Image 1 (spheres, helix red, strand yellow):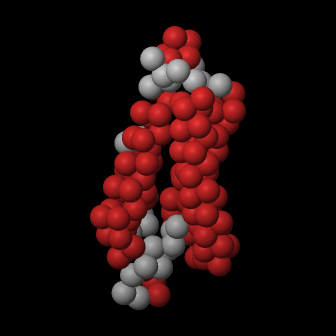
Image 2: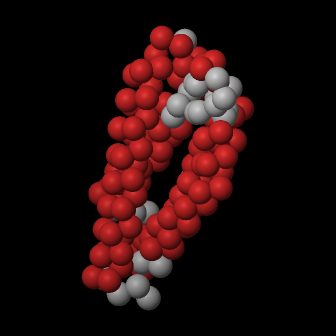
Length: 137
């Protein structure tokens, strides 16, 4: 998911018909930041000895990661991409379901963005605490 989520927010959405100026913003700012954050999460999880021995994370860790993955995927689905004209304002949701969903797509995009951001910070904090509370090696 370290590679899939940034790819989805940039090129994946474009392949499904939602593209505009905001894709460039996500390509150069959001996707690299998300990649680095996901890489940090993977390192924090992998360094823990209990995870390497069992080859699995705890249920709490799994639910946090699942929530993060789903919220980022949904954010990409609902994200309204900006353009030069009214016709270019769209998301994957509006491309697949119709322009009448532009308002709800905007609202859901913002909600899933903040949910994703909160879950990302929560994952990093909790995984760092778990690493510091347990002997990593």
